[in-house]
Length: 283
Image 1 (cartoon, one colour):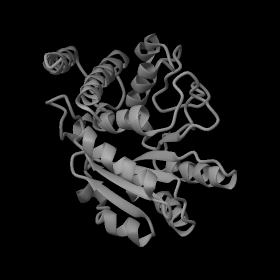
Image 2 (cartoon, one colour):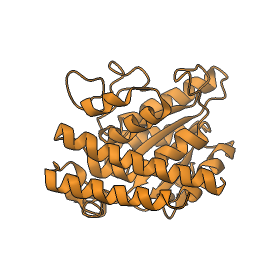
Image 3 (tube, one colour):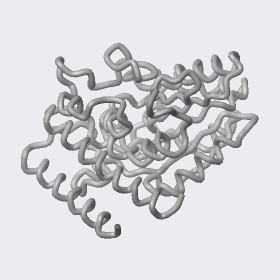
């Protein structure tokens, strides 16, 4: 990526974070922390890695994206709006009965969602099934699934991981949003899933770790590597910060789904506005 592309992605990241704050504040519900932590992952996938057609989101030969951590869907909805796949006005009806954007992705309401998700780990099995089906049909499309660290506490995840490794499903990439926190606290203290790399490799996966999951260049390099693996599914472990971009949310498990009051909403928007101005000053 050149410097212009990188700056554009950084500006998009601020835009997405402002959307997340706005959506959850208006709804007075939602999951800010985990949505804010995967912004860069989502943008690099949809704008640089995945084979898509902006003019046709359901193009038959597209790459597929599964948001297994479905509660963090505000990020996905904002990205869809940047792609022009949904009207931005729909964002402000997030979690409302008269809107199409539910609190977890719903294929019934939004057919551009590859599947409905919400129950943690369900998306891992769906992604595996899609990747296996695409291979059987002889298609070159890939499947990407964003998973959470807390999902590694679910048995269904490991059933999918074992099957994918044994069948060498090389068109399947899991991206782990490893922010280290879940709704009740530190993932390691609640039910420690580490060592993650060793476990996936034992199940015949190839693994690449990204030290800074908010660094576009590091993410791009790791995801490009994944596309070149020919004999195994791949896991990209991205170390992220829950609540990234909003100072009082960063690294705080309470912001898994805490309601924003007006004072904190204004503080968050002011911080993100400053970040946007600083980036535009570079132009």
